[in-house]
Image 1: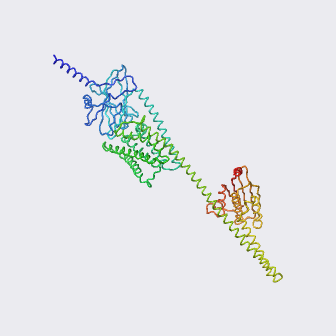
Image 2: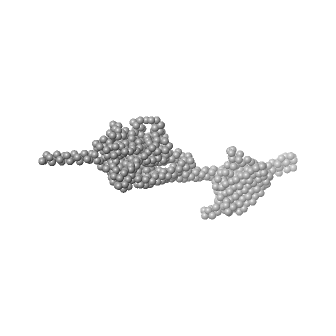
Image 3: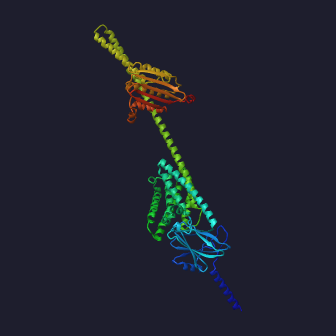
Length: 638
């Protein structure tokens, strides 16, 4: 009896085991937005190249393993064919549709086989980045399959995935049709907005490059574009929006490693340029410069290689090297930022880079299969890139603003130095004039006066003698008298001891009284009352007038000349107009050639007074207008 009971018990267990073997755990499809896959999705590594019947038999023999994650399958870069199994049962009394999405950015080809309980093939659906959009089961940015179940129908899904030479980071989603399309619309809107923001950053940097012609802005354009393309590639939009329809399917073989390498290389180059780390001066930074160039060279080589048909083994090596170079670039960015924290912008740059360094590092490590951590929602790469590009857009704007201010400050400093140089030069000239004037007046003037007295004394003693001798002595006295007057005129021209004592109008009128002694040019003048002028302004304005009058005497060959001086209250300017009817000169030619001493002195003194001048000259004569800004209220306060 006991033996019979044992046999019955073991018989029931055998029946139960056989029943479980034949009837897998079906995921009930009801009216839900999405479905959990952790307890239902299974995977199998096909190392023998089994056909569909062999795979179904492996599934029946429970050789498939549980996913072990709510939705993610991640084996890094692999050379294997991976199969996934999912049993579905429509729990409703009506037809029901769901969409299965193995949302991988590296899945070259995925074939979905739909079988019944007995393993009979009912339908086959194809998708993947090696399949043209029009040949896919669903023409969407994701690799997706729509499964329609009749009321109470059961099916077994066997999905064959080929990502050999690429990474097998595959998130799985199972949604109803409405939920799927709502998510896709929202996702497209999000990535469309993100793309718009990044494109504006690119446009901003491109305009700065066109305007300033500095290479750093062009590097930022390349970095931001690479970042955008990597983000779009990672979520399937690069293929769907850009190159998939154009037949560039071969690019999908290297999509993530290629765009990741470009992003990392330009990220490193931009940081080196932004912090002005010259590899010629700082040997410490020669290695990151070399790594950045090596990364760009490898990216270019990747494009060449995919133009040929290469096997999965070579493709794996090419992609893996690209991923490791990307990690090196990101690591060097972090090291450089830490080394430059002592600088003013160091902390800001480190903060701007930190999100992308973290997001990009985890993304690369996830792609290699080392981790499956996503530090930011919805994606570490997306958030890190967005924060980084926006932060550096502000950074290059600030850098441009700071550079412009620094240049303006430098120009102001140069201008101040030039003014100081002119001031010192004029002071030296003035001191030299005073010295020469004293020498002329005290020495040569006194000597001529003594000689004149001696000659007059001889003339007096010899009066009544030889008429020719007396006539010669009289002429000598006249010449000595003229020489004394000329010396006095020159000394007065050079010296200006009366600047502090006399009003400016009086000084000018005294000058014209002296000019009457010469008979070359007939001078006329109109001098209005001017505000009280400080000595530097008075002295330089007086020298300008003398310079212009001397030029007329020396070069103009004029018969008449006129000077007009007045204060324009409306423009708050002292205006000087000097004109003559002389032969004139070619002003353009004088500007192109080396300026004479007179023009240089005029320009220096006008520049010192922060004024302007205009010259109009021709065969009918020359007219010069000098305008000196003078705010009476400002000087009265001083």
